[in-house]
Image 1 (cartoon, helix red, strand yellow):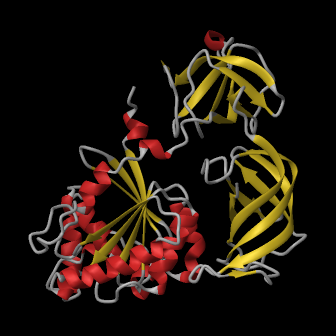
Image 2 (cartoon, rainbow, N blue to C red; image 1 turned 45 degrees about the vertical axis):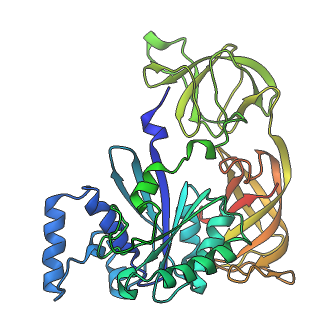
Image 3 (spheres, helix red, strand yellow; image 1 turned 180 degrees about the horizontal axis):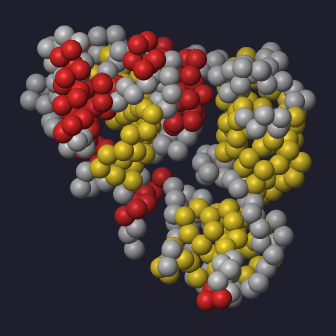
Length: 420
């Protein structure tokens, strides 16, 4: 059973340095895939003329933030939606600047694919290496290196080959399961939606063809059933007075009616009586579907509980070892008290130890680090007040991640990935 709402959606995060042409590339994808309204296009053409350009500045389609347009840098995560007959897409346009690492972590954490842009004239920069490290750390399963502005180096195969060799040598140190390198010109449209005649030496697919066809269904954990309960559904109407369901988003595994399951942390066992999506009954549910489960027995189940297979349960952990990206101007220090939100449960936690700070550019580990400052990433030990029903981030990006919250302000101050 193919659910088009979930299976045919590709989330991808884009990252690039200032002037790599990221906004132009997204604009080109939107325009050439016919995802733009005519009035939007005519507005962009008019603004381009007013600025004195002799071409249509496609970057204007995506650079929505005025301060960003003025400074020429992307400072927040902007989401764009477009679709082709094959697939729907959500683009997280993430900032490339080092001081916005936290925004990039936010945008890339749910991505199926990471798109790193480099300017063919500049080759690999410190920033492009950092983007690749972050995408690898966030376990984004597919990576595309888009070598842009090939028109400005006369579509040279030698220039492309050097960048290709440099990047693949660097990527060998990282965990990147699937890497594609595509030469293109966002401004001219070469290899973005259509194959370019200017680069006959390149035999791969265009960027859009790759995005449409990259296989993502097997990236999700379909083996370990994980269903964090978001809320209990008990309609008040007489017609449904006997109905009791548990709503949530499937975080792992395939769930079917008749499956033997356990409710954690209580350990009570039962079977799945039915799976509902709106008024429709389903034969199965899998990530990332949001459904309501009905159980055969009337158990005490509440928000924050986890439904799993009897013979495949997550290990409850109170001492959490994780990589944390710190997002607050006030540094993270040992003995600091915070709230932790993991799947649908929230608990209190304390920072036991900061093992090292990681230099994202050189992969060097600073074992002397006593704190983590804004946008820094490090390995941290936490002690949680009640056990988390967690997996390692490598195994499951949903049950292996969490956010840290300042209890006084309610502000998110960190994002973590649990080590296996």
